[in-house]
Length: 250
Image (cartoon, rainbow, N blue to C red; front, side, top):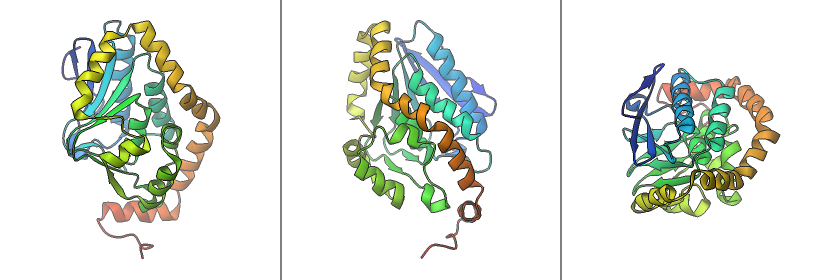
């Protein structure tokens, strides 16, 4: 694999080095918002990496200053398509390393994508936020990957407040695994593993997450659809797009 496929309006830059494929969300003009096209393009790129016997691991990262701003409010994917993408990352028979670059930002659905990864590396100054409550919805679908992995009290705080938080707190709560200075060592460790060993070890550590998909995915998709269709969500999304406070803000 070499650099550059841009698929269906959802650009994914693909590079390969010594058996590690890097998939970079490459739509900086939209802050890598999770549009229908971006979700489809990433799914296609992941499928190719998963089938390639020369690939030992995948790095999921970004161009521009934002890993992902969350759902594209102008061209969102269907909730089912996003659930399928999250599950695809969890079930991929290769380890997936999420990488938020130094100073990068991840918001809302972008955190769900990081939660689907097996290992998450974040550079100095990166920050995160679960902002759904501020537009009148909730982190419903992304709970499939986040709640099995996050410390419960920290999850409650950030689900409810939408506050920004940095790398130290993200590490303490279980969202981030390591800092930038450990990325090369992690990738070399993955290169040292056998394909079978990596595949089967991943199955062990993702079993609990997959149980959540089997139990809760359908109900959370329905809940998300109901919330996004509500009057409060319409006001919240309109206020966001108009760069003003929603009417409920005190």
